[in-house]
Amino acid sequence: MVLMGFIVVLFILFFSLWVSARRNERAPKVIRRAVILDKRVRLENDSPSEDYFFTCEYENGEREEIEVDESEYGIIVVGDTINVIRQRKLLRVERVV
Image (tube, rainbow, N blue to C red; front, side):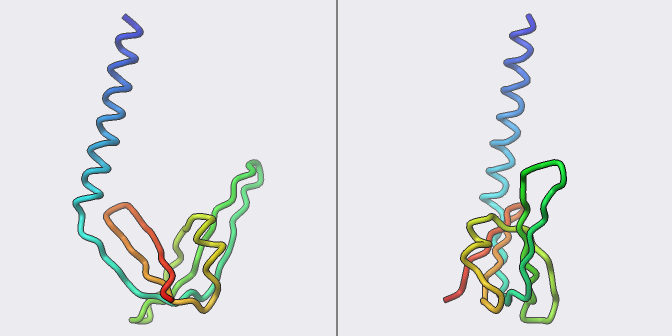
């Protein structure tokens, strides 16, 4: 009986993740151009994990700090122009060459 309950809970979790991913795919993409003003890394005291951030300024003068993956952090430098792509809860940046 416990095993059956565990299987049902796992099914519900996977189904909810699938529904959320489908919603993200269907949402419109919003692409904004920005310039990187600053980069920083946040280190947690009790954890070996690191979080990477860009401070960017959009064409309208608005500034925002966004969290990015380590791979994006490593190839983009201060002064680069990027496209910030949002699609519902997903956030991605790509370097404009």
